[in-house]
Image (tube, rainbow, N blue to C red; front, side):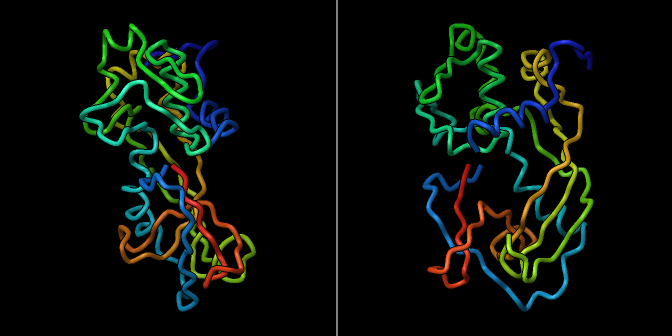
Length: 220
């Protein structure tokens, strides 16, 4: 894919910029929950198990969705603080390309966005592509660490963006370099309801009022 040396920003740069303005979870309530502190876990999962667990959980990170993607409502209210930086990256790029009018509290398609609405998918919403775990570079079990509950694992991995749709390559090629891998960090907590028993944690906060001593604030 041709890149533009002067105006092209890497996905990492856009994500970093977006993270300054706000922060992806299917739980839109933002309600806190207590993560499991499982002290019986004495060894970290393998890199392959982590990759299998994390892959489905990050796939739609670079998407912005509505409650019913098949029947989107415009203008759509947005709360910037609820977004992961990846979601903000999508909105920022759509706005920069003139497809969305985004003023921080609501957004709606512009005339150009209505004329060519291929950027909106009735199942996935507005997606730059599929976030993919290319490799897992480190898996560390937490026990007695001050930043995470016992039995959780810290993971470093390399993320790439795959299945980039034609409309994204067409509209975002002046703003986004889709080909540059990103080095990412995440904390996983043990959860038998999650893929391969490990779930991506929200924001972990020490909270003595919780049975585990930790509170998990969900963002999306």
